[in-house]
Image (tube, rainbow, N blue to C red; front, side):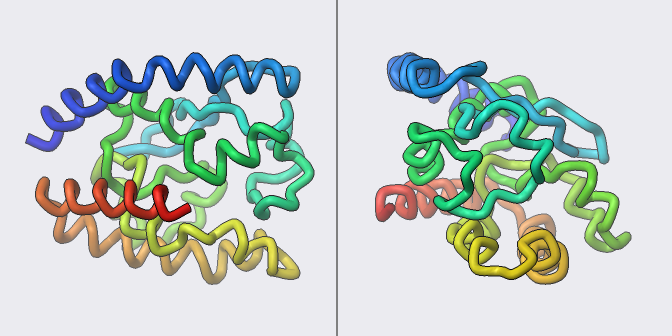
Length: 196
């Protein structure tokens, strides 16, 4: 049922949001050089790599300067990217990943290999399900960029504080996942985006 729901909802979402995709694509191209989409290798279900799609909100080759984003003051973020990130519009192309089966609408956020290699055996259980566009951890840590921006060492703060807490929340989801809970989390996500 979850996979059928994902296919139906992501397909409908891609059709409904196609006009917005065009507007965002034009805005991104007019604002800075580089591709419309940002693609990054993330770790998915069963510890397998996949290519995640996002609208590009940063300057090309920004990954070379670090994988952690530190809020609005991050100089790598473009002018359009600031607003695209603020309203989570950069996440919408992940509907493509959901439709293809790389991801689900709801599930633990997919991480890059560098951080997955730091997981404990217990934390690795988050890879037993498809990663999601949204999750309870994402909602609780909606201000993650601001937390990291205030840290003296953002990478250390992420590894030692943020990541373990988010993984603990994600493991609760893995143990209690239901389609009804997924729908509630989707509605909560829309509520958080609307609230700004």
